Image (cartoon, rainbow, N blue to C red; front, side):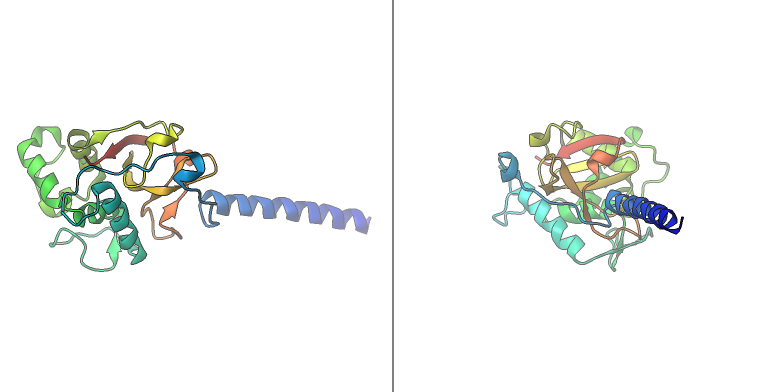
Amino acid sequence: MKNKYKVGLIFISAIVLLFVVYVLYFFNYIPHQKYSNSDFNITTYKSSHDEDDDGIDDQTDILNNVKAYVSSKPKYKSKYYGTGYPNDHFGVCSDVVAFGLKDAGYDLMELVNQHVQNHKEDYDIDIIDKNIDFRRVQNLKIYFKYNAQSLTTDIHRIEEWQGGDIVIFENHIGIVSDHRNKNGVSFVIHHASPYQRYYEEDILEYRNDIVGHYRIN
């Protein structure tokens, strides 16, 4: 009887352990295997434009800048800055995109403000505030719709997803990584919560709220 009890206990413990591992893997607390474009015979896209004249094409520049930004390990906190861009070690999802574009020559704060001023009827904004408007996902949905190249939202058309692209969800935004999972689906560099362990995560196959996929051109 004791042996049966022990076997049952071991079986239940194994099930619980597998469940815990699955949950940790699902939420990216356990790193996922990373693959590159070459593993899927995908040619890496490079832009023909270099906005800031630094010798690095825009697509590569944006990706490099985003990696540099998240390497500083910003802590997640939503707050208002009179400087527009956060000037401390805090930030939210939109700041990943804003800093990636800024150091490539695209000042998203100024660009969004100009577009809002010229097309206020397209935005659900009562009082225009350039310091915060460019940090709101709902505004970025509209801005990129009119000011960037729109691409597929089908994550399984893997060759059409490239590092440096912008991906927008219902209430979230991030930059597409140059790493992929075993199915070729791109990782995303993003900042989603204070509990996020890694900034580059395998999330696209686990979400059903992708509303936009864009490229600066």
